[in-house]
Amino acid sequence: MRGGTLHERISIETPTESADGSGQLIRTWATYKANVPADHQNVSGGETLRGRQVSAQASHLFRIRTVDGVTTEMRVLWGGEYYGIVNVKEPYTREMWLECREAD
Image 1 (cartoon, rainbow, N blue to C red):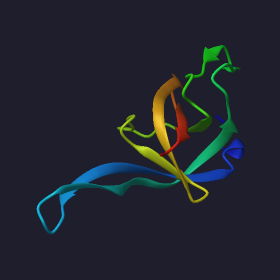
Image 2: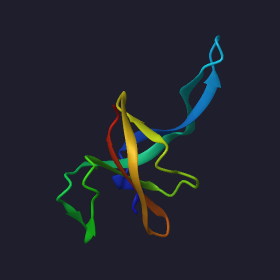
Image 3: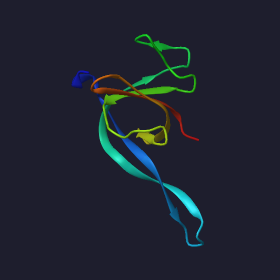
Image 4: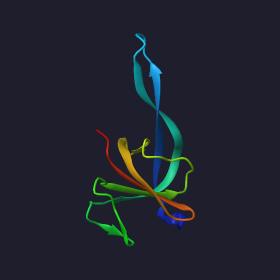
């Protein structure tokens, strides 16, 4: 992947649980990796990208250089909006695709 195509910056966040004042567990988010160079594409479930099917749930695709440990439990922060990761693909040695949809 050429670095010149990575014009956007995203943050990848991971969920954490902590107890509130009454002892109830609440989900919060912590930054896993900040300022990640990315390429963004709007997609629809029926689109094919380079011969690979995009998940029917995905509405956004972020292409990044590989970041170890990224899972579908995480989310992406881009442009002030949150996107849940629905699929992680590594089609090439140093490239990762994060298929995402708008977070609820």
